[in-house]
Each structure stands twice: as C-alpha cells, then as structure tokens.
Length: 112
Length: 116
Image (cartoon, rainbow over the protein chains, first blue to last red):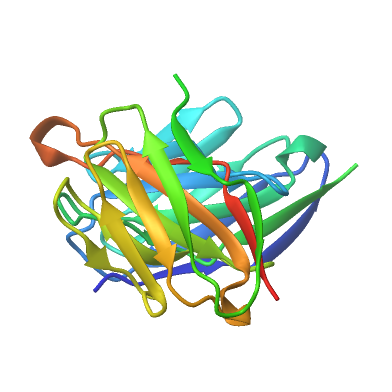
C-alpha cells in the first residue's frame, strides 16, 4: 500500500520568513495530494491541493510543488505570520482508492 | 450547510462500557472515514466506507466496529471500551469528481473520548 513520509516533524521560523514542508510517497499511481492545516483543538481543514497533471499551484502565500519523478511534494508558505502556527498534514491517494494515506504531520511555530 | 456533524462532542466512559459515536454529512458524499488522533500524533484511520453499503478496515480497527447506516450516516462503536482507546475521534467525508477523481476530505469537529 501507499506510504507517506513527512519532514520535518517540527519547524520553527521567525515571522516573515518562509517555511517548507516536504512529503515523499511510495505509490507511483497516486495522483491527488492535499494539504491540511489543524489549529490547536480544531479539526483538520484543507488549505491547498494538487493533482498529478500539474507541477505547481499557488494560493496567495501558500504554494505546493509536485515532482512525480522523485515522488515528492512540498508545501511552501511565504511571509509567515503567527496565525500560520498549526500542525500541517500532507496526504496522497490514487483514483478510486477509497482512502488517503496521511503523513505524520509537521508542527509549525511562527515566532513573532 | 452543516458539513460533517459528530455527536457527542465529549464523553467519559468507564472501562468495559460500550458506546456509539455518530457522524452525519449533508454534502452527498460517497466516502466516509473514522480516524483517531492521540495527543501530539497524526491521524490514524480506523475504518472507512468508500460507498454506501461497503466498509473496510483501516490501520487500527481492533476494538471498533462501524455501520454505514445510509449515505449520510456512518457510526463507530466501541463494544468494550479500554483506556487505550482514549483519544479524539474525527469523522470525515469526501466526494468524487469527474472520472472518479479524489476530492478533499471534510472533517467534523471531533469527539473527545476519555476512558477511565
């Protein structure tokens, strides 16, 4: 089955700096890669996703890049703000798989 | 739209007691999921239902049972609760796009379950 590894497990940055979280996956047939943000005590919520037919997607300060050959995808957050502090999860799935495989999460702390 | 609704939000049980966690979605999604999240940990899939009438085990199914009651509802049952099942339980649902392409999961607010 699919295996997703997420790094780093914790990340601390100064406000205004950039943050990058990377995930690698094992199943070459995986074609959907969402990122979720979970604030303390809250539910995970989708922040951005990418499909295998594109290499990069941006939404304001957030971007995701996908390298299908190397089987990894990354979340980039620019101009970080204290409200970006949360746990971020990546996930991977293939069409009609019925379920997604999640990474173990990255705790991002943005210091004011 | 309420999205994904879980009940109860909090529950305290004694070891050996049973209970059912309820989940309902109003987005006409085919797939539904149950996860547990222990403190400081990731999401571990307990069971999932890819479509109405089907259920499958995830990575940590022992001690749990599920029922896909209809397209909207997916319940999780603990038959004999154990302290190791103390956790936050999240229900989620997702739809299907064109050609069966995957869509993001929508999560409920969670049930915080403590077993003494």
